[in-house]
Image (cartoon, rainbow, N blue to C red; front, top):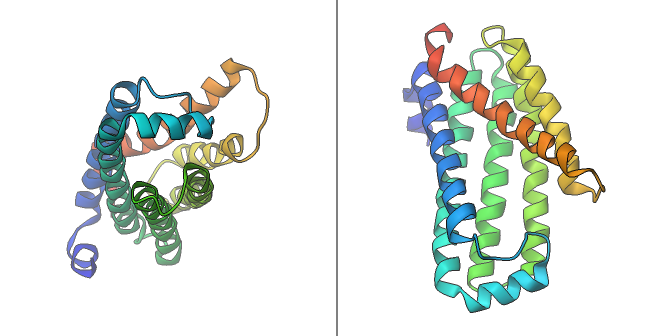
Length: 206
């Protein structure tokens, strides 16, 4: 890890962020829309537990997919540290650490669920805890981008706004479907636009 952090340039790290993020989106789409397409709607943990028991092989492939995504999230966290370090090393460290905490929390939860150390209900609690780390990561990432001086401030503002939309996951709020969809679009666009900018404009990085 130290070798990776000390021997990769910010421009190469920007490419890593872009490729890793787009790859993770592709894997998540594959898992959610194909592997788990016949599973219950997320949120009904009792029905989900029955589905897992009835579709163990399919669930196994889904777990592998999610583990790959979480590994990519860890790589993104390290690469973002490299990208943001020239502006503020402390903020960059917090940004990377929060993403790693999010990824490791969910990885531990997934392994515990697969080996039946915990049940679906406990996994939901761990996942919620992990999302809290992720929301904080997006907030600090947005602030770091805003203060960097070499990445557009508008991307930083969008990321900070997106971090507050995660309250929908933490608090059960009855919102119209259109608003929920809009919130999810904002959450997805914030990171996607940053990733695209880092790849396309990497030569502007220090």
